[in-house]
Image: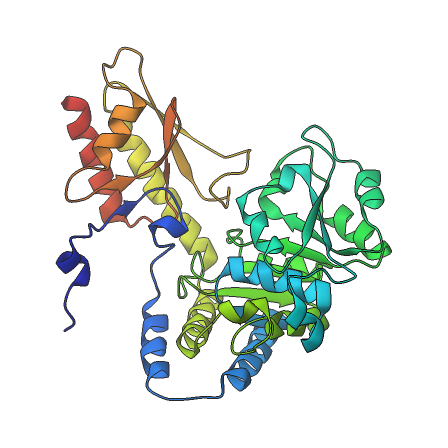
Length: 373
């Protein structure tokens, strides 16, 4: 038995009712992945060969042209940008982040956010098209010029009416001879996104390995067109003379991700949704009996904690209650079983993505105690 380092360090175990957030550890590592990582750690391999063979196997599983395992989705964005800018040319790569001939990446205004910075790491310049009200096809067409390396498409931005659709972006970009990078890091489920987005024509599609797939938290995946995926793989460790040298996907991460992905593809997705619905219904019924709460189903229509398909409850505090939302959320974070939720000033939300039923029961009990004072 290994020591309980969380206990030794005084780090509390949380009940994650917010979603597969990196700040909370993503998700629970699958036992198959943990065992595979332990086995992989006890030997040496040629890392380049491992990455090549792993990518070939994943591409067969997903029926895509090519795939590569990365050191997380953020690293995958950086690698994808570099691949579109300079391909796998060692000389040009060594000069990054100096600007090559193709250095611009187009992004719709409503797709902008903190993760875009990863595209800039190899030296790309982001060029915005459209505004918060509309993005017209001609906005994208006019933004693309001879210095454009790629168009970036963040899947959560597509939830907004002002966004061009992915199919529109692919059509326009390809007509101009420009590849499309799709950030779908947290867009699982549905599971078919692993192959359907690439099959629709996206050149590079990025996923987190440590969210719904439940692989190593610091793993990620790129799927898409062979030439660009292979170039993206070039911009990572153990290759030198590339900004991607910092993006090291170790042998343990690669093997752990493979084990997790294989289990994920074999899983009964419908059964998972049924379990989430059961937990959601159970908690809704339990909380509806508590005075001072207004509980309802919630389906996000704005970008936020992805994916929006996961069942959630919205909880509001009645005006007659002396407690505020902030009071309740703060109380939930206290004690030996802190409950973490996503909240605003008017409401908080229970996301069932990572919750086990025993934790759902604890949430009901904690809320009952808090409201009774």
